[in-house]
Image (tube, rainbow, N blue to C red; front, side, top):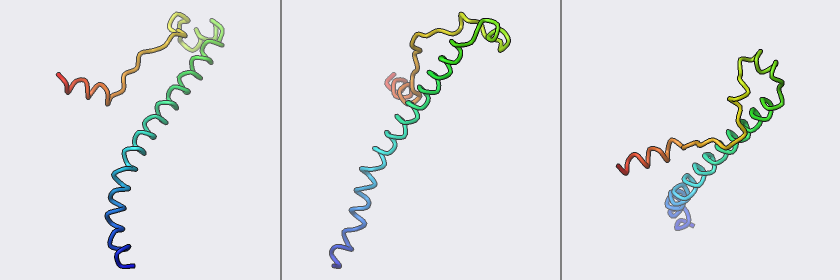
Length: 84
C-alpha cells in the first residue's frame, strides 16, 4: 500500500501534464464555436431587418454581408510573427 501512495504524486503530475493541454484546447475551441454562433445569430437578425429598421439602428445594408470573414486567432498570429 505504501508503494501505491508513493506513486500518487507522480501519477498526478503526469495526469496534469496530459490533461491541462487538452483542457486548454477544448476551452479554446468551445469559445471559438460560441463566438461563431453568436456572429451567425447576429448576421441572421440583421439580414431579417427592413431597410428602415437598419437605418434607425444606424446600419447600412451594404455593410451586412453573408460571406465568410477572415478571422486570425491571436495565438496563431503570435506564432507566425515569431517565425520572422
